[in-house]
Amino acid sequence: MKKLMSLAVTFFFIQASFAQLNTIEKRDVATTYANSIQASNLKDLLYIFASDDFQGRKTGEPGQKKAVNFLKEKYMEYGVPSAFGDSNYFQIVPKKFLKNKYNDSENVLAFIKGTEKPEEVIVISAHLDHEGVSKNGDIYNGADDDGSGTIAILEIARAFKKAIHDGFRPKRSILFLHVTGEEIGLYGSEYYTENPVFPLENTVTNLNIDMIGRVDPKHEGKPNYLYLIGSDRLSMELHNISEMVNKKYTLLDFDYTYNEKNDPNRFYYRSDHYHFAKNNIPVIFYFNGTHADYHRPTDTPEKINYEFYETRTRLIFHTAWVLANREDRVKLNGTDIKSN
Image (cartoon, rainbow, N blue to C red; front, side, top):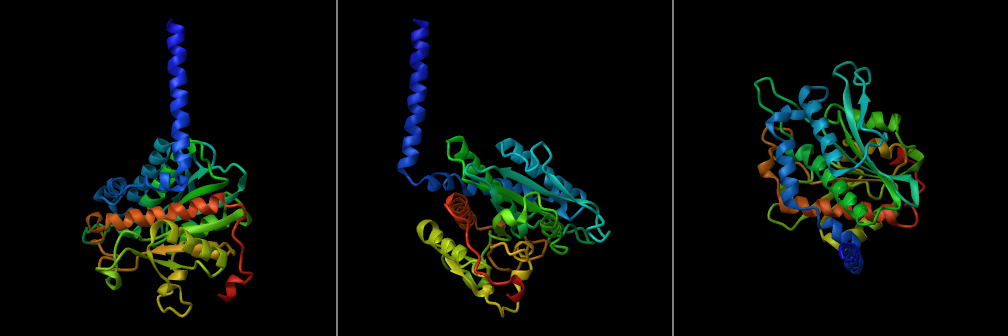
């Protein structure tokens, strides 16, 4: 009798598992996991990462060391492996590379291996560093810049891991890359592209997230929006995929003002995607624009618009999902980056 009961229980759980998979398959699979990205989770993590405990996350300083260990612990908790195949998630950026002005620092690399095209890699990046502490003791918490990008990557990785648990591993591999030294000269992304863990010729796209939690003066009181920079510079196909994903899933107002080649702000050259673009890797830079708290101690987590932040993060997840699972990698326009 006990054996029969045990078999019956096992059969019940197998049926339940199949029923769950069937339910997921009837819906849009990507939406199921995008919806696991919740404003409440983003908020809880950002309040930690942008707290005074991290002392402004200045490159090479104790607060930055605490930040990289926080990220490592989260990836281990989520079951997302290191890119190095062991428990070491850190790529050391040496003091010498930082012009001997800063202590050794670290990029953080987590990795999901693809099934059909594991050698092809989507890189999702954000910088983990910020401005540190001022001479008078004010802490630059950097909630938007770039705590918002950092935590968005964590939640995107967790959503992909959840999909894998349910049997939906992506076709291509995904590198979750948290770079250091952005505020002092894009050093972490430069170091990675000069010392890539995965060959740059196999890097399909870089989706770079730098400030996606706030609203700039231009868009106050308006619907959710996002500035996109660089999406068409190297690959019109990437640009078109991005537009398609937004129309299908998130309906954000895409603003391409800063993508204009004569834009005086030159944001295309001012965040970590640029070192990938220099290597002819198609990029999208996601950005909410500057605001009164930009590079000030007042860039704190209570000022984040968490509803907007959630949707923007889901957009990037959806875009990564499509890029990782489509049959062909995105095609280059055939133009030389040096002429852009």
